[in-house]
Every structure is written in structure tokens, then in C-alpha cells.
Image (cartoon, rainbow, N blue to C red):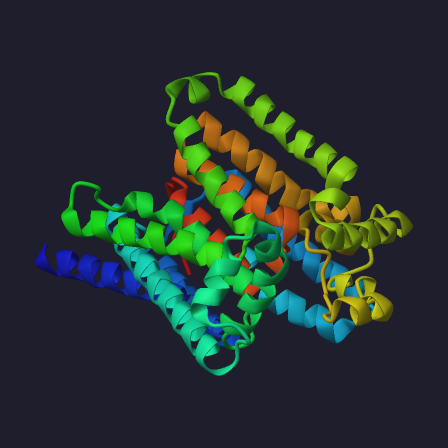
Length: 404
């Protein structure tokens, strides 16, 4: 009996360590994170071989595997095959995470430990970002700290210039600060695992939230602040039992809100963000050329290349800053169905099973997808898929042992 208990503890520590390692690698280069993901995959296969137990995730999660298979098949349509391979490598978590979390057992204890690791990792990342801010003011910035702070009191100046300063002062290892913001916001959903009655957990949660808000403000992340507000509103809204009792009505209301956002962006997107609206328009024109099957994996890089516009703005882009349009450009309506089905069925499943945490997480991800393509980045895709797989409830099935 003691041996069984010891083995269970060892497995629990290994699982916690492997998942935590993936989290710890988030602030660094994607290649480093890939090694951590491979280690977690090995642990999953070893666990499956030893226990012969398969942890069945909700069906909507497996749409992510289908989305990856689409990327693999559409790779043969890519004009830039090398870039398509690179995109495929970045989006490997769509395949790996659903498999891994179907083979390992994740207890509430593991979730709480990983939550603390995630919170501390993001806090240290934010602190490092502010340290770079201080270095920037000391060595590079044409403005002093207090002068820059005064500029922040002018909203027009803030939104026009702040984000460009942030890209210079809060970037490390060639990582765009927007994707760091995405990782930070996703972490808010994992913090619900912390024990709110424990004083250190309450301190950790408070520090995390305060630093997250300050970081979002000083990087001028409009979508980050909007997603943060949506996350808070979502938790307040979904805390009412009637939302889940009337799940069908709630589902229709959420779909109506999504359609409403689409209508607003179509009609007034140019006034909301002229540059992104230009990107979206280019993507839409490309979609019209091949609406059903798209242009192939990684095609957004070719579609969005526009030397004349890049000369005016001073930067180049390789995606339309909208995940939905990125999907349609590359894979068309047919190839985009798995990812869209994941979102829609994920919302429906979460409502039916009263899973507020997963519901809020998916909605937050969908908000980020309006002005970014988070699945095209290691910092956007890893925390999102990781936390979805950590949050959902699983059922267990026994695999048949080989008779050979």
C-alpha cells in the first residue's frame, strides 16, 4: 500500500513539474518552450503505457486536433512552404496539449500548484518589464520618467505614442509585448484555483491583479484592458445561477453579442482602429479570391506584405491582426470550421456543465482574437490551450490490455 502511495506521489510531483516547466518557459524563446512541451509529451505517453487509463476530455477540445490536421493538410497548398512549416511548429500545441492532458491525471492539488507557478512567473515577467522601462528612460528615451508620466495624462498622446515606446522598452528576446499581455490576462482565469481564505494566496492574487493592470496601462494595450474588463464582467455575470439554468437562452445571447461585435467592426472599424481596419480589408480581399479552401498554411505572410504601406507605417506584418481572418485567409470556410466549432461548442458545453472558468477563458481568448492572431504565436497559443485543458472536467476510461 505504501508503494502505491509513493508511486502516486512521485507521479503527481512529476506531472506538476512538467506542466510548471512549460509555464516557466513562457517568457523565453519559443524553441525553449518546445523542449518543455516535448518532456510533457513523454510523461503523458509513459503514463498512458503504465496505467492504461485514458482521461477523456470534453468533445469540443478535440476540435483543436482537427484544426491542427487542417494546418498539416493545407501545408501542401502553401506558396511559402518554409514559412508554412514554421507556422506548423508554432501551432503544434493544438495537437499536443489535448493528447497530453488525455493521458495524465491532473488533480486539484496539481492545478493549485501550477496556478501559483503561473502567477509567480507572470509577476516576475512584469517586474522585469518595468526594470527594462527604467533602463529605457535612463539610456534611450528622449523623455524623463515624470515627463512621460505627464504625457499619460493626455489620452490622445497616450494612445498615439505609448505603445510604440512600449515596444522599444518592454521587449525581450524579440517578443512583442502584446503577447506577454495575453499570457498575463489568461493567468487571471487560473488564479481561481487559489485558496481565497489563505492569506498568502490572497496576497499573491492582489499583487498579480495590481501589477497586471499597471502593465496593461503602461504598454497602452487597449485590447488587453478590454479583455481584462470582459473577464471581470464575465465572472460577475456567470456567477448568477440563472445563466446556467437558462443555458440555451444564455448561449443565444452570447452568439448575438458575437454577431453584434462583427457588425460594429464592419461598420465602424475604420474609426475604431484605422491601421487594423486596413489589415482586415486586405485580408477580406484575399478571402474573396478563395473563400472555401483558402490559400494554404502560412499564407497570411504573403497576403499582408505591402511595401508601400510598410514604408508609411515603419513596420511590417505577417498576419491581419485578427485570428478569424487569419483562419479564413489560410484555410477558407471549410478549413476554419474545426477552430470555430471549438469556440462555439466550448461555450455551449461550458454553459451546459456550469463550467464558469472554462467559459470565461474561451470568451477572453475570443476577445483577443479580434485584434490579434494569438494562435500564431507561442505566447498566445500555449497559455490558452494549456489553461483550457487544465480547466475542463475529464472522464476516465480503461484501455484494453494487449493479449500478445
